[in-house]
Image 1 (tube, rainbow, N blue to C red):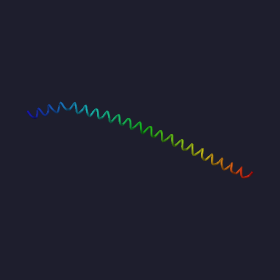
Image 2 (spheres, rainbow, N blue to C red; image 1 turned 180 degrees about the vertical axis):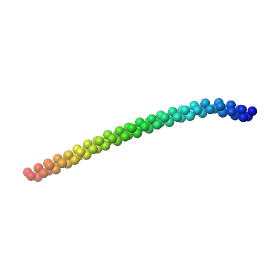
Image 3 (cartoon, helix red, strand yellow; image 1 turned 90 degrees about the horizontal axis):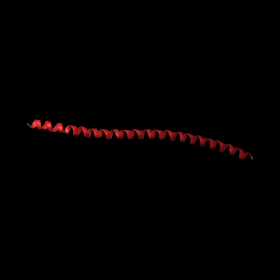
Image 4 (spheres, rainbow, N blue to C red; image 1 turned 90 degrees about the vertical axis):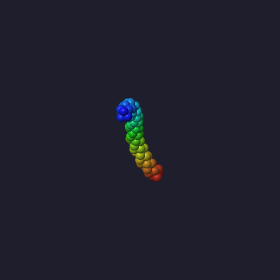
Length: 77
């Protein structure tokens, strides 16, 4: 009798446990999607920043080169 009561009680709890585990799995999936989107955003942002830095360094080098030429021309006069 006690064993039958235990089996009946556990069979009533199984759907609840499965339902709760399903909810947890859905939350974990949502969290995973957010993390993946954040990683994609971070990688894209990193690539854009590297391109900007490269462009700025190129402009800086051009300005230094032009400055040297202007200095040479101004010294001659």
